[in-house]
Length: 214
Ligand SMILES: [Zn+2]
Image 1 (cartoon, rainbow, N blue to C red):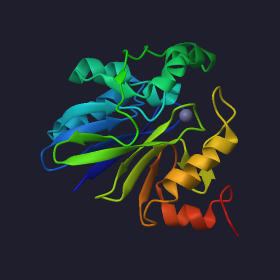
Image 2: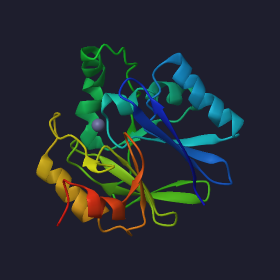
Image 3: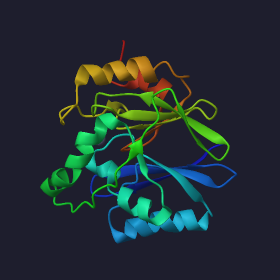
């Protein structure tokens, strides 16, 4: 069974996730730790729980989701994995950060993420990769069918959806991703979003004002 811990980091209040199981191998998704104190919070948790980070995944390359990539990479020796369709955004992230007064350490070059439909393994658990573009050109979500949980980045939020006005964003594509890739998951699937509280597929199918069929 997957255990999960979230942290809310950086001025954008981005959610960083750690997933692990009894083996103590862990996956770090979207490390947004920015300040020295935030990096320490993440590292202390990993140390206290005796976790061994083995994969570093990014749902997409927006600045708030990759701010801690360099730290995680150097501290744990794992390369970021990110969809190749996000590379332009990844390279532009430090410039974008400057617009917000953020001095972003550039992310190390990612190794290519396995194709959508593939699985990412750590310990005795695995995550499926779902291709869910629209908020950014090649956003992916990570789904555990066994544990019925989804790490969705900025695609689907509690009673809201990701913005689509940033470069490479597209409203119709985002709605299509949610309907065709997320709303087909079991309704009880818990959705851990890139910002704000967790939700579930069933709650969003019923109450999300952007997707309501009523
Ligand atoms: Zn984003």
